[in-house]
Image (cartoon, rainbow, N blue to C red; front, side, top):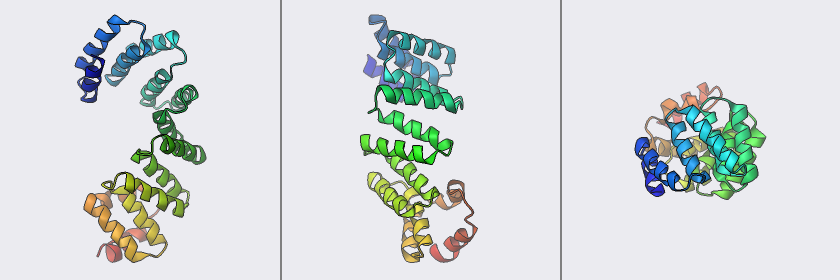
Length: 226
């Protein structure tokens, strides 16, 4: 029944998921995992008070359950309360240092505060724990790019491509780094690959790269994308 609830939840069929979770909880009313499942669905359906009540119940039953702090952190992150969100993810990691999702989401929060050294550390831990997570590799590359660590960034984006070769953004960033290195033919090939995967990538480019790219945009149009 729990597995069925998880399947319904993945498909955003929250009413059906709740019915399954509640049936399981009825059998074992103090099972923290079951309580968290229901609280998470409440959080996803904006029943915040009910979710908080259940998270508090879970904490009371087992104050050392890492998933409780992780899930409440995920909920609080939607409130834009960065300080509390970071604290919950850090507590989850303290209780379960191998929880890669907690490290990744902590990295995202730290990145939003421009704490790049701390962010880098959390992304690196995430990759160690979950080598197949494309997102951690890609966003680590973005941090390295933004802090002008271009050689590291290029290697990280290449690893992201190996993890998921169908994502356009890493090719785009490598193209930019190659352009900065005056390797125009190589830059052109990576831009063409990015465009083949996402024809709209050029239009969204300036929203992703956080500095003046006027000259580069002109170069893309006149030299690289000819």
